[in-house]
Length: 281
Length: 272
View 1 (cartoon, rainbow over the protein chains, first blue to last red):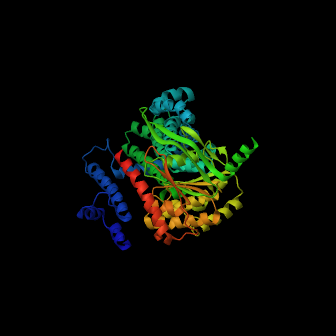
View 2: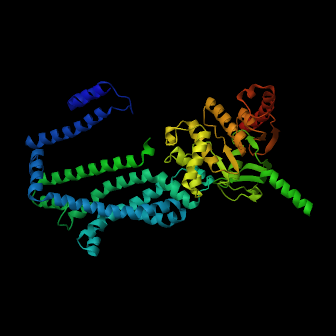
View 3: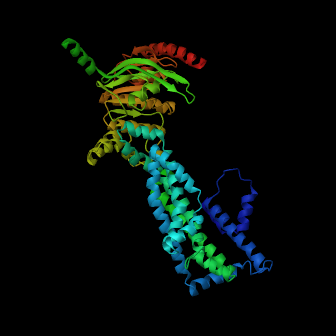
């Protein structure tokens, strides 16, 4: 099994694709880990090849779309000449600041709403309403209130995340298995004990998944916040590059955002798996 | 009247559990009323092993849930040691048909759940847990999570979890209903062995006639919905009971009788 996987991994993407297509796979039939990585990589390579074909081949004007090679060169310049690492640091800090603040408030509130139907009836309609207010629409207002400093950026993330987390946590906690709650009652658990020792631990893996999801969304809000009235951050770099028609830098910035998102997502997933080993047994 | 109160005291001590005129009517979403239980009276004496036998949907589980305090009777009351049951509590341990171990806790932590809730010191918890883990034959599985156990092992853990709390009465709602036949028979022997040695008051709901006779010293037969007591049967088979008793003439005679009783009720239930 492992030797076959190895040959798959060392084959070119085209061969991997061909092999996958040779025998018709039944729906839901799993593929080996090696084949998964091979296929995933294959699409990235394909994407870059198509991109390179159109740009280097001269089918698209460089003013509108830089080639992959220009993009990489511009990216390198960003780091060595424009202190891009500082921009990345600023953006990460804003995301984390706003996200952690939102989670710290939303998770306990969501648990309370999920556990106590009265609190849910009181808050749920308002939170549901707020959830549909786009965070970016608050930017002009937040600039009025908090200026164009860090607080404004963090508040954009906060507004974009907090209502989502509250609602999703409340739903998760409210969907607790009733039979486990009843079992806990017959074991002498108090109402407090039910929340602390049944509802929270039972919902914890899904709450962590919710946080992972919302962290992904927070990344989209931060860029919007940085596009307007900002003097640092990846979003700010992108607006600057737009003024200079430097599509290479814009694309590099976008790719960096994607990479950071991917890494944080993987880290979050691995952390959740380790912390809640019981749920993935 | 002193004589009367003495008599009352005597009844109280004899009857561990008293079910007095308990009925239950469910109200549907459109106000339609379903009578699950017609008023029921019966008593369970200390250290009795009573099985409630009835066709599915006869309200036997509803009665057990009312005793557990998980459901409220429409009329009547349940007394445990003379005091009315008002809600769920640790003195009435329950084992459910569905697997209700906490999936985030290990076998040992599951068994310690109730003791931890009442604030028992940790060494005491561990010691008691170890005792009951040995009793249900799960030594070596202390640190396993429920998902790593078979159905039978999960129900054994659930029994240990209920017993570790030292309840006054053990309520069992078709605890072996989801298990395959071989495992179920083994579980019956295990539970009976524990009951023979530990002497607990047990109220056990089942629709399996063999199970009802084998475990019990009293079988209470329920009618089809609306549930009421159709007949009661004393099982005087000697203890300790061995599985071979199931082929004895006495057992067969009881089984033949209960089969007739239940058949009529199942047919009535099927007609609904």
